[in-house]
Length: 260
Figure 1: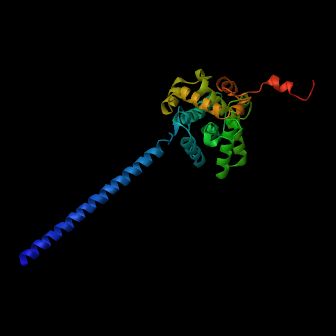
Figure 2: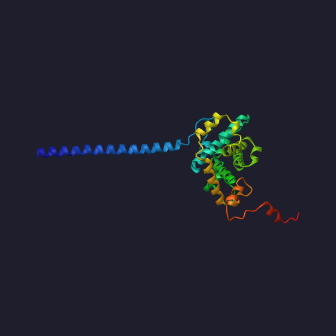
Figure 3: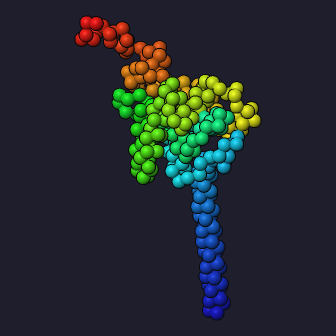
């Protein structure tokens, strides 16, 4: 009996040790899984963390600027997100070149959000994408208690960024229009120091921006072709959308109730 008891007790202890080892392994594995998931989430979140400066331009480090960046990153394909940040950097480099002072936080937020209207979830039924983006930015900033006067500057910067009017407004509005123009078409790029341009493109590569942006604009034209009348994308939409009767200035004049 004693031998049987000793063998039984020995087996019980081995079972307890084995169960403890299993639990430790299980908990340890779970900890590694949790840790791995946390690291993955951290890596994903840090993927959008910007450096302090790029090409000699300081990146605004405020809560609202970070929130705007997160909004743009979550809403935009990568090629468009990079374009939005390059818009700020190129516009800031031109402003720096000409000795123009500007509100960096306002200019950065407007640049980060200036193409939101091209994303379908922020698109209205009838407004052009510039207005949709400006309205979306205004809603976003009001929810965060951003000052109204600065919100209006951001609204103007986004709404006018494809218009020549942007160059006749304040420095933040002009910065967004100029920066977007440089990044899309290359205008004034030759004025910038090659090392600064290289730094911008290293941190925020183009990622086949030209072809991706064209597809995005054409999809936008197909969704709401008549919203583009009189805007930057008017000619593009008329050229690529079939079966839509686009009005002309001549037709508008002939339909006028005035004889002369």
